[in-house]
Amino acid sequence: MKGKHFISSESVGRGHPDKVCDQISDAVLDAVMKEDPKGRVACETFISTGLVIVGGEITTKTYIDIHKLVRGVLLDIGYTHPKYGFDAKTCSILSAINSQSPDISQGVDAGGAGDQGIMFGYACDETPELMPLPIMLAHKLVRRVEEVRKTGILKYLGPDCKSQVTIEYFDDRPVRVDAVVLACQHTEDILDETGKKITAKARQEILDVIAKPIVGYLTDSQTKYFVNETGKFVMGGPQSDTGMTGRKIVVDTYGGIVSHGGGAFSGKDATKVDRSATYMARYITKNIVAAQLARKCLVQLSYAIGYPEPISIMVDTYGTSDVPDEKLVELVRKHFDLTPRGIIKTLNLLTPIYQKTAAYGHFGREEFSWEKTDKAVTLRKEAESLLAKSAR
Image (cartoon, rainbow, N blue to C red; front, top):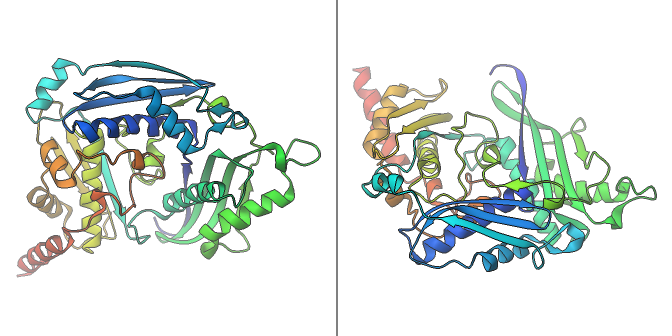
């Protein structure tokens, strides 16, 4: 886009009800992967006032103590006391788990995809992580909330929080932070004499300790801050908002900057291409941008259930590449194994890594295998060779 425009992205903290459910579902997946890497998992979680329900289809040789696992996740998140509206020690937990349908498993066992669908990957040169700036800042803000809460810097904070960042762009480049939105759960300790809003002192502390260390380098006198704009946020977490696995798919990916295939990630093992092929699509795009073949790149993959190869591959570099997009598709087919088995092997996806992905986004974090740029040099050399041949 040319000229001035604004783009916003949001994130939510570990204590947000939907994110609590994502973490529980992925903790179940990790427990299976740890003991039975060939296990099949499609786990969903629902949470409300005083209640957690874990359901889905799981086929495994191992035993998972669902009750113990759920309470452990909740305690680690911070729901340790009734004052936060939810208590890990006393909440009710129901389990409703069945085995995977044999109609699905017969296709997956033969090496096919565990579902049909479309998956997108994206990378751009806006940040060192090769991610869009708005979503990276939004994630860093909620991560900072947890840090200052758990270290006791701001003792009045609760586990639930949300962030939103609006970036001003000019000619497709980020230039400044235009607005920051923070909603931080807190105890009654910081309410003013009316009991309807937090004190000015507490608001300033949240800005000084949380917001400004993260976004300050891109702000100016015109930057707008919105902190707990309803006045207060005492009642948070599952007490105030029902949560479910898979309801934060845009938070999990690129913050709404690009298209989303619609499939959620958490609670799904790697045979489900909703998850694994989206990871592979990010791996592809990050290597293309790291190779400096494009400033930004979108890849779409599509699959049919039970069939191993992608039905289609699309590459879009938004006119930022000297290499034609169709030639990049050829390079992708040559250098990336896009079958479910190939993706699992390339990215080492039969390991218990998933609970860590369930908060603060699945992308832009070097700890994960799909963030490697080990194909960049090869892609660069082949692309240069293609360009040299076309110039003759």
